[in-house]
Image 1: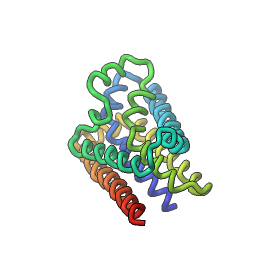
Image 2 (image 1 turned 60 degrees about the horizontal axis):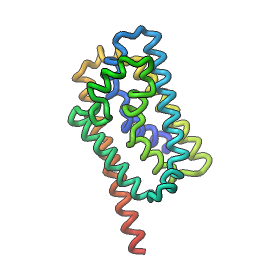
Image 3 (image 1 turned 135 degrees about the vertical axis):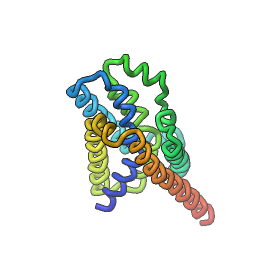
Length: 209
């Protein structure tokens, strides 16, 4: 249960679906309720598929390119911490590669569930690197099952939040969403810094031995 809660909390913080609410509202303002539900569902499914592929195949991709796990941890920690700083500064959408031009282009597409919502807004480099590093330490069958369940739970949370995005935007308002995003941003920075510290300590211990 602790493993489930840890991974769910870490993924949810890094992905931060609440911070995506204003963008989702903007992209779906002309859609009816049924279409918004469909987009929310497929966004959640796409995120789950991307996270699952990253979790199971990411380590092999690293091996192919000759990238060490510690290098990934440090790079991932930097990306995660950067995302956290973006949340604190209110530039989350820019940090995730969603500029006004991208947002405008997305509105002319038939489907936005994959891009820009699933990629790069939700399943970005931070969550992908987090899962790859997590898999390297948790490869027992029970741990893998718990990890997949945590990813399913995150996908369900994404669906619920996006499905309720227009309602949340009215209830919380812009200031409420910003406040929550900044709290989450602080947690995300801590996760990123912890990854970097752990990697540096591991490298130092390995060299000393």
